Length: 305
Image (cartoon, rainbow, N blue to C red; front, side, top):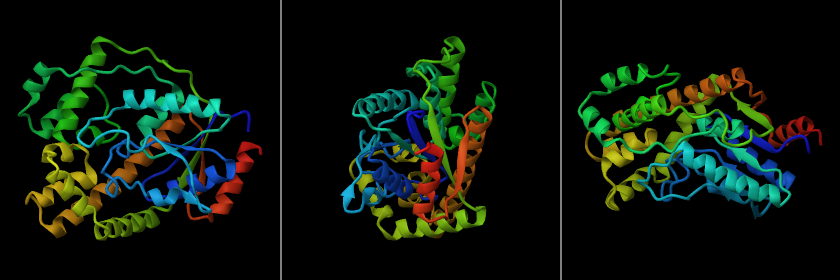
C-alpha cells in the first residue's frame, strides 16, 4: 500500500462510483475527496447526483470533502479545484490516511494526478463584449481555431464557449509551465459498464430523480434569485430543467433532450478516461456490475495489501 499515495475511482455517470468508493473507504479507514465539478455547489443536490446517503456504510458516515463548498451561481474552475484538492490531500496524508479521490470530471482528476500548473485566468471584458451576440456555432468555430475539441463540453452553452475562448486566448499569451504541483502516484480504478446497461441505468436514474424532486430543486434555485442563464451555464439537468420551467420546452421534450444529453455526456466521460490512458495514466478497469465485495477484493490485490 505504501507504493501508492492515492486511490482514484473513475467511471461514467451511473456506474456506481460513490457506492463503491464509500465501501472501499470504509474498508481502508480513509476519507473521500470528490472529483466532481458540480457537486461543489450547495443546494444543487439531486441534479448533481450527490447521493449523500451512499456515504453511510455499516452505520457510519464516511468523511467526504469538496462537496458543498461554494454557493450556487458561482463559476468554480479547475484552477480552484486543484488548490482545494491539494489542501485536503495534504491534510489527509498528514493524518496517515491513503486518500480516495472519486469522481467523473476527467479534467479535474487529471489536473491533480499530473500536477499541471494552471493559471487563474481573469475575465476579459473587451473580448466578452466582442463575442456577446455570436451564435453557438460561430463561437465553436472560433474555439476550434485555438485548440482541437476532444469533446463538446466547452460549447454546451454560449457562456461556456465564451469562457473557453477567453482561457485559450489568455494561454496563447501566457502559456503555463507543465508542473505546478508534484504528480501523485495513484492506483486508478475505473468502473466499466456495458453500453446498453449504462444507457438503461442512466434512463432509470433520470426518471427517479425527476420523481424525487429535481424539478422543485431547480424551481427553488430560480425562486431564490438565480438568473436562468446562470443555471443554464451548469449544463445537463440544470440547463434543460431551466428551459422547461421558463416555458422554452415542454415536459416530454425536456425529458427526451435531457436523456440524450446525459447519454452523450457519459460517452464524453469515457472518451476522456481513454485519453488519460493514452497520456500515461494506467486505469485498471473493473466490471461495475460485480458485487461490491468482489470489486474491493480486486482493488486490495492491486494495492498489494
